[in-house]
Length: 506
Image (cartoon, rainbow, N blue to C red; front, side):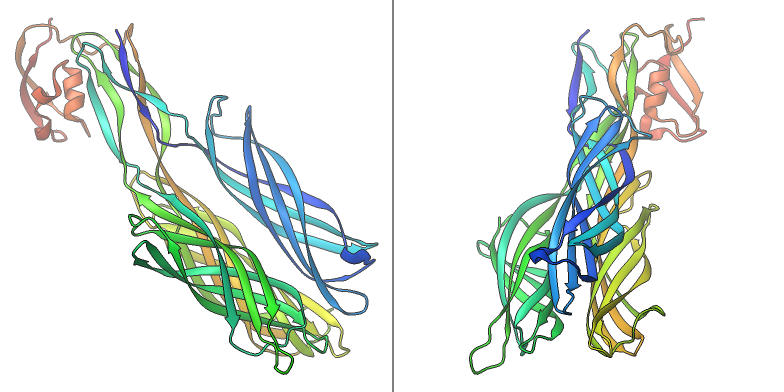
C-alpha cells in the first residue's frame, strides 16, 4: 500500500515565549570627560537572532542607549552607545524538535533603566523584556490518498490569508523647517516617519507622509534650546503596479539637523533623514486540512497530529491622543526656563480576547529645564496608558497572539514652577498572529485493530438517528459506505435518516 501525501507549506505556531534579562555595564563618557549630569536616557532593544537549543530558545540582541547630559561646566552634550546581549530561556508548553525550521516574530522592550555617571563612565542597568511567537516553517506531510485504492477524506477548509512583505526601499528625505531657528550646535536629534497615504501613478506611486523631528541644540549664545516639528513630505517611488491596497510602515534609520543660516540672516534648519519603507500586501490563501479518513476496501485508521496552524497575520497601527500633567518630586528644583521634553512609551501588556486587543503600559518623560540659578536640570514622570482596540479580523475558534510596540510624540502646552502640561500622541504598532488548533492526518495505520462496526452483511435499508454534530462523513465511515450514499446534505442533528447501506452480519 503506497500512501500519497501533500506538503502543507503553512507555518505552525509552536509556542509563545515571554522572558526577560538584565543588561548592565559601564559605558565610557566621550571626550575624556570625568563626570556628567545625566539629563535624559532613552533605551531601545532589537533582537538580531533567535536559535533553538534542545528545550531552550537563545536570543541575541542589542540595546541602544541615547544619553543627553550636562558636563561640569553646565554645557549640554549627547552621545550614543550600544550593548550586545545573549539570553537563554526555557520553553514551556511547546514541542521543539531538532529538524524544525523556526521563524520567530519577536519584540524587545526596555524598562527600569538606571544610570549613574562617575569616574569617566556611565554605569547602566536595564531590564529587557522579550516576547516572541515561534513558528515552524518546515513542510508538514498530510495524507491525500492511497495509490490504487479509494480513500475518503474529511476536510476542514481554513482561511490562511496573511499580510506579507511585498517590497522594501530606503529613501533619503531632505526637508526645510519653515521658521527661524538659531542653531549653533546640535546636541540631540531624533525622528519618526508616518505614512498618510499613497497616490498611484504610472511606474510607481507618490508616498505622502509626515516626518516628526525632535531636536535639542545650542544657539548662538550657547544656550540650550529645543524644538519639535512635524514636516509633511511627498516622495515619488518606483513600485510594482500590481501592488494595490498595500500597507506601509516607515522607520527612520538616521536623522541629521543642519543649520542653514547665512551671514546676514538668522538661521533656519534643514533636516536630512534616511527612511526605510516596507510595503505589505494581503495574500489570499486557503488550506484544506485533512482531519479524518477511511477506506471501504481495506481496514485502515488515520494517524493524526495536533497542529496549531497559522491562519492570520496583520500589522495594524493605531493612534491615541492624551493630555496629562507631569509633576516633579519634592527634591527637584523649580522650573525657571523650560527647554524641552523627551518621552518614551513602554508596552507592558498586550492581550487579545478574540474581539479586542487590550494594550497597557507607561509613557516615561524626561523634562529638561533651567532652574533659578541657571543650572541645567531634569525631572522624570511616568504616565500610565490603557486602550482597547478592535481586532482587524475576527474568526471563531482562532487564538490570537499580539506583540505590540509604541512610539510617542509630546508637546508641552504650559507649565508652572513644579509641573508641566503635556499633549501626547501615542502610536501603537501591533503584530497580530492568529492560529487554530487542527488535527491533521499525517499517516495511515495499516494494521489497525480500530475497526468500524461490522456491517459486512447484505445490503438493506438502514434507519439511523444522527447524533450531535454528526456529519455525512461520520455516518458513511460508520457504515463503511461512500459519503455520497449517506445523503450528507440531508443530515441534521437528532433526525432520522434512511439510506441504502450494509446491514449487520449477525
